[in-house]
Length: 250
Picture (tube, helix red, strand yellow):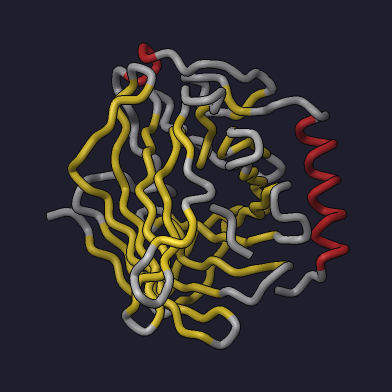
C-alpha cells in the first residue's frame, strides 16, 4: 500500500538499503506481541495478547472515526476518504477492525481498499491484511494486486504503528512474499506543521517503501488523534495528500 519529493531515486535506494541492513540485518522483522516494540522475531500473534487492546493515538481505530485527505498526483486532483467501520473480521483467532479507504479522481472511483487492523494490549497496531482493487474510468476492476491476508498462502501479520514510535525503529508492515511487502521506518518525532485541517503538533514522520517497487519511497506524517496528516512521495512519483477534515466518533 506504499505510494510514491525531495530525494531522487538513487538516494531513496541508498536509504532503503541502509535501513534494511542496519535495522533488519537481513532478517524478517515484525514484532513481539504484547511488547509494543518491533523485534527481530517473526511469528503468529497470540490471541491472548489482544484481550485488552489499547488505543494508539497515532492510528485511530474507534468505529465512526473518519478522515478526508486531498492532494494531487502528476497534476491530477485526488480525494482520499478513510472510515473506521463498526465491522470486524476474525483472522487467526484475533478480532480485527475493518477500515475502508477510498480514493477518487474528479469524483470517479480510482482505488478501494478494505484493511484489517487491531492494536494489541500494549497499543502496537497490527496489520492483518487488505482487500484492494484499482478501477478504470468506467468502474471496472483492473487490478487486485496487493491484496493479502495473514495466514493465507504463507502471509504473516505485520505492524503498521508501534505503541510508542521512536526514531530509528523499523518494522515490516506487510509480509506476503511477492504480493505485499511494505516496510516502515520512524525517522522523526515531535514535529509541528500546518495542513489544511489546521496546526498539528507532536507528530511522527515515517519513511515507507516496498522492494516490489524499487526506487519508490513515501513519507508519511502521523499526528495524535488524527492519523495521517500528510503523505508525499520522496522518490518515484509526485503524489502529495494532506488532511482537510476529520470526523470524530459521536
